[in-house]
Length: 159
Image 1 (tube, rainbow, N blue to C red):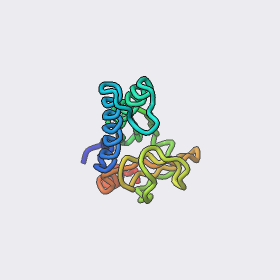
Image 2: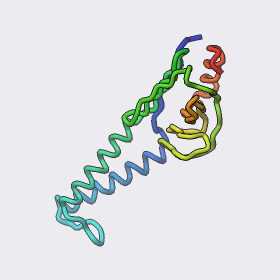
Image 3: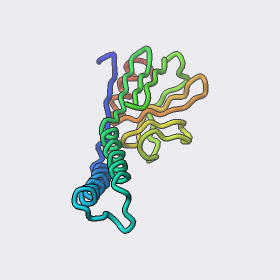
């Protein structure tokens, strides 16, 4: 068995992408109609510059969202977690009081605060590596490979 566990996840829910692309497509349609053809978009249309700016923000959001990744790397020394492009954290096993693979129920997607499990980093599903640090901080790193992760941690003597 390998001495490193890695997992790369991204938002791949089809319904989420239909929603995002539908909103972006609608705004781009409105932009073309209003700016290029002179047909006002909506009952209370924005100014052309406002519509251009808002469309740009939506497209930028979609591009950033498409590039969000939850990367996990675990070895005998540390747990590395990167929620690209937002944050990067490393937790040394020496600082971990307990670790457990859990099912935490549906909490939504992204970085979720205020859970009984602490901060949850999740892009899909409801299973993850729950950590309680010696400092008292709690967090969960979501996984799509709970069985593989548990087997790896058991083989390394980390669970």
